[in-house]
Image (tube, rainbow, N blue to C red; front, side, top):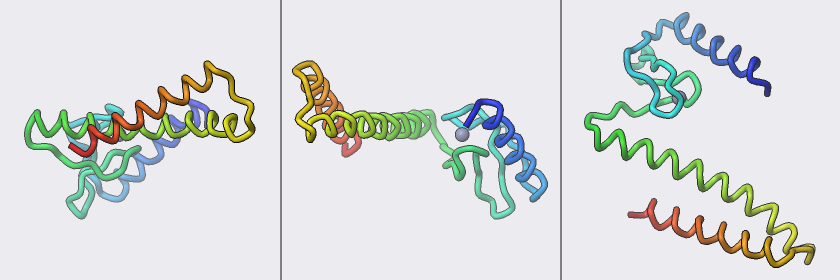
Length: 117
Ligand SMILES: [Zn+2]
């Protein structure tokens, strides 16, 4: 999807929210910075990320952002890992790629360890 299409989609989602009676709030989504909306059910949503938990303290906010960031990292690592695993399976992997593969596994392990704590 191009940037313009993405912007259009965001604008469309925001106007859909407004039309359905949602109220634009002063708070912004901690992930994308877009304004949050309170929908009729009382739930707070981001036009892109959907339901957002409103945090009460700075600590909770940091917690929410870092767990979202870690999720993103885990997804990115898994995607990258997949390409290396394919090389590995085809027995077409060189030493430096093998090192990358091990680094990626290391990152994944760390991320999982942090998320568990
Ligand atoms: Zn968002």
